[in-house]
Image (cartoon, rainbow, N blue to C red; front, side):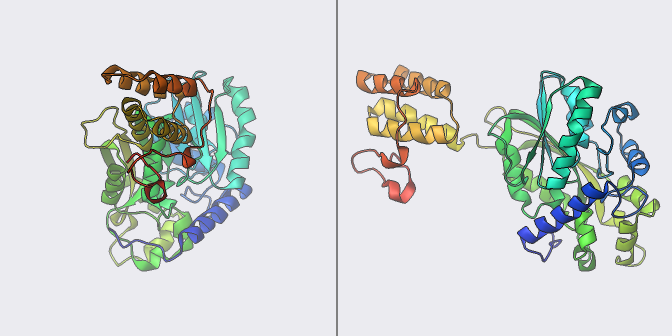
Length: 387
């Protein structure tokens, strides 16, 4: 683990970041200078920056005014190789820059969702939707208020997750990667551009609020990013460092990087410590790749099948209710019932008929009040009486 940690409490970090980016959204420009910078810049400098890191000039011409605020440190939409019809989620969407870039790539049959915790940014992005629709003739983007540690998105509902210079701002990065794994469909992929550390920064830099808002003080070692993604259940993780971005920001005399330079040891430069990092990963589509696919929802489906084979009506009621709470569809539960019935030597018609009635919506059991009979585990202890 790196020692690059802010002394601020998690909610204080979020508040500082929210305030800093709220000011950028309202001012529409620089918190640093007229040159590009991770903490915002003017329109001309922002266009120069994104072209420097790989965005196509033609893509930029269709953007709503003000969507590009120079907050990028890479090009996740290019990494993602987006396809028509895909559902894309942008973490920390800001004014909508990458959402509006991704929209035409997924087309009318696709969808792009931007999530941001800063109300001012969200207002700016939503205001830009009208211009986007007019210029592209597409109605396929939306923006939701929320934190990336608690995404307002359903389980297994997203094909691709992108993010541009945002995850490093989170005070709980392991939880972000867990959320990424949760909302991705099996086989879904991640394409993130972020700032990471080659080695820990001096404490004088990590204590600078400007560096926090500028995507630097909260960065962690690239190896930590890989570990967090893997522990969340992602596979095929590929990290590509791009230190040239940091050298460019330093050469452009960005005030933040110049201030950091003053706090570094002699004969060192920011790119000795910091790099732009492209992160690509995938959620396994099948088991056998080192990641567990036994989610709480899958566990409840197994329990439903076990209830059928055991002819246990209270068990079925309990696990049906738990599965519904987790968002499991009646269709998926019907498959579990059918499978259980196919392996049951002497099926009891009563429990099968009960299952059919529940799956057709005839009942809404009070799951937390129902439990299996006999010497099973008490629901007061584990909340799952069937073990």
